[in-house]
Image (cartoon, rainbow, N blue to C red; front, side):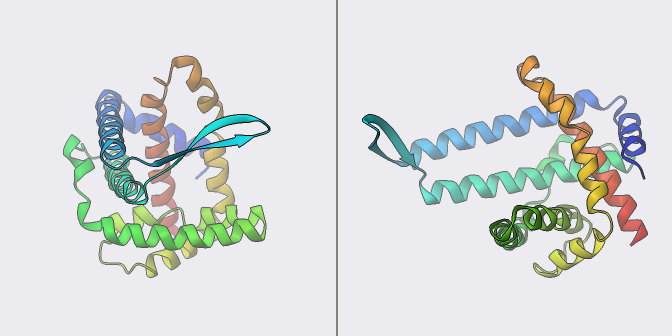
Length: 215
């Protein structure tokens, strides 16, 4: 499917569901903000004063335990959002509780995301373009896990890579087609995100379903 066709279908599927999707996103943002605030208060980072060219700056190093907690929460919410958008893309009516429904996958997703991150970093160190290619090739991990919770932590990387063969450029172009909306976001004090994120999320699932069916 072309990017224009995917986006048109996403808009149609979101008709009548935009407010619910925006509310879901508001809840996700609120949870993230509260967790980050609490974690940073309980497990503050280490601050030290450094001097550059005669000017002193305060440099804060994040607490590793705090970073781990916020990473897990971020992955948990990302999975829930992906599942929420998958239901919309497949013509279903997701409930708000859908964002809390994938906790059983969090450890597997964390390990797979860590492995993917290592591969992407290695590709980026070698040269920026291989890092981008690897990132695109491993971009379907969350969706594969939601459809197939039993898949292994390394097998999911292979499945995403194989699924994306011949589709990386199309996916890159789909993401690029939203750049204009992102540039407008600061002018709306961020409120545009409550429309844009569901639009992108549903579009991504439509793309995923199209290449999954073709694989």
